[in-house]
Image 1 (cartoon, rainbow, N blue to C red):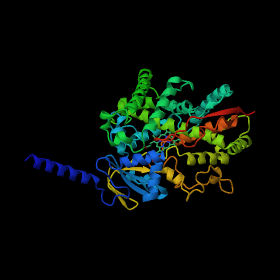
Image 2: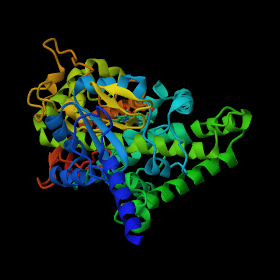
Image 3: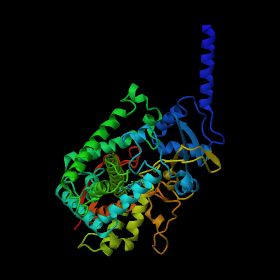
Image 4: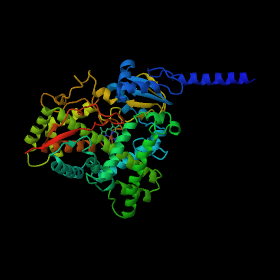
Length: 492
Ligand code: HEM
């Protein structure tokens, strides 16, 4: 009897394991699934070998085609590469969802909140509310430019006072960049040398290194947090989140104490608190306010300051390009004032340099993960509802069929013979496209333009040593420049 029971149980387990290895019908090509872990072990081995998540998917797309299907832990994951497949994902409503799961809910109290990883009507409403109110506090307007210009002046002062010795540039813009966003969200700014904030931004940066766009190990096998909380990154993520929640809670509580409900809101947090007070809309809650602030803080600071860090690195590596930008600034803006957004249309070479920086450095190489909201088809393959869908933006920015010598840093590729900016949107999309397109694109671009031009207008950047001048940044949700120092020489 006992043997019969063991036999039945074993057969049952074997059948379950075999079912687990089965791919959905007409699923995108990719490696065979193993039971329980799917392709996780293979993925990890490949990641170890090539060093970057996006390079794993690029390698697989060369082997299997523009649409690759895997299973990471319990999650089906499809990655789109190349302009056509990526455009389809970013512009079709079927893919407008965001992944759900343990990791994606961890930062939002076990619920689907915020903007970045919410979806449906809730996401639409919260995105609209945020854009509308950020606009009313200056987003995309002259006030925003003014605010950022003030920040550039403060940073230039610091550079001026410390430029007798080499300065770390990979993180030099962290606080200044956050200040522009924080002014509209919370109506306050931080001193550039504010140690507490610098520390907070550093741990946010560290947290971005721990996971990847598919949610990482902790999402694929959440039970690991009980078995190996350190090894799977759970403890570190919780540490970052706890500090962020504490920081945001203090800010929100200060607003509660100081705001007058009858007056015009001073910033986005005030506007949200008033909305909670005066409407019955149940999507405006305390938890959602925290989650929204967390999303904007995380999405807004890291991406822009990494881009600026890389922009400085590229100028040190390409002194000829740096010189040409400075010549254009001197010619078109003159030496008596800082560049402003109104100069942008005539600063064609500078604009081409900034676009080439974004193409070459690929700060968000896999964008932000999408999710199929219903059973659908991509590139002729079935994509079951719930599948995580990645967009390998790196694959189009670095495709040698679309860009000649893609590894070369060559700003001229964005200029035509009449010196006008030229590019094809389906081959260049650092902010994504479609309804999920980056919410902070205007702010990100304005920050990058104003800080980059202000620094180059006032200083010449030179190498200190060659050791860390590598474009191969740290991997993670975004790519971050490795620490490097430059010598700044004031221009007269
Ligand atoms: C250089 C700077 C930036 C880059 C390269 C960048 C890139 C991106 C990309 C690729 C996406 C994903 C689009 C998709 O899902 O298909 C995204 C989404 C997003 N970004 Fe940015 N971003 C930048 C700056 C900012 C800033 C400054 C903010 C803050 C206001 C911000 C807020 C967001 C938000 C909230 C989303 C999610 C939008 C949604 O799901 O509806 N980003 N960004």
